[in-house]
Length: 453
Image (cartoon, rainbow, N blue to C red):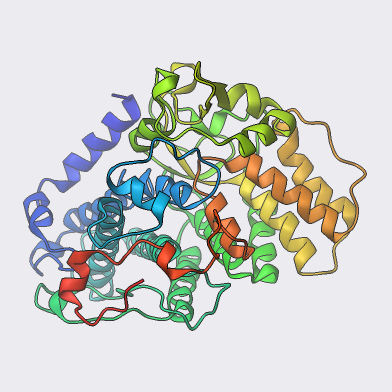
């Protein structure tokens, strides 16, 4: 096991000791008793538990990305013929899909823990730490709650670009007792869901310090806001936030495409080019997109994206792909490149450059040189010569979107891009609700009037 994981587990164990048993027994939406939350260490332990669930293999530490890739159109799904993944091939989902259950309940567990931290801080239930620490913890809890709601709505609801009036997800914005957690609560609209996400992230960006180690800081909140606005088609705000991160965040792209996916020893800061990272082992991603026997890779790339990478990907072709003896293209992003450990980069600086480039075009008032400069910065890391000739909105957008597909394959990005752009996905309309995971059976039992996908 990597030193970084051991370090994180050791720290977590130290601060979780006093209330671990209570946390383990809590229902998804319930909170610890008031006595437990009178200690700063106990509140911090709940915050660590929230991070742990948020970055878990069953949520943004792997399953969210795998699910988005299965939804999308860049994989060869020949082997996805059994269990939960098979339903992504047929688009005939049921409420018992294990992937859907894992994502839904792990995401809401992260939200529940975050709400508990917020309640303890807002009610001033403990006074054995500084006001600065409380402010930072509040910002972190708001970041996790907003980010978790955002990931859930992207995977269980139609895209915002379809209609803001469509059903979103169940919003959980307060800590609940075990009894309150059983009260029926229906899905908010997409507009209400996105409004809540933005409100949480805007509050977080004010409260969080610029640097916060591997935990969420101000720039992580700003970068996620850029992503949220971009998904919504609000390109002015997407441009503003992406530009702020690039200009003022102090991050650099580096010179090696593999660095964001490598981990050497203890991680106290995200790697070069990464704004926010999930510490873990990437085992869910590795187990699906790569196998030491390439012939046994469960989810290889399809020929279309492989050809694009081969002809336009620069060093991404040699660093990130291989062809198995049976002729299937395989992603190496999650393969422990050069025997280093693998964590999951959740927000990368390259995304901000591409968001700024595309938003610049779509908000109007752009110059060709400024747009090319942004996507050329991403190309340069992959050893691709700069593009100094492309001009005009249509051609520039095509260049940016190609670069994005090359940069983020098997990171769960493509599916969300297809929906933002209102493109069909393997012959199914971008906003077809029947092509979505069902709200899991456990949630439906609690909320019998639930609007189902």
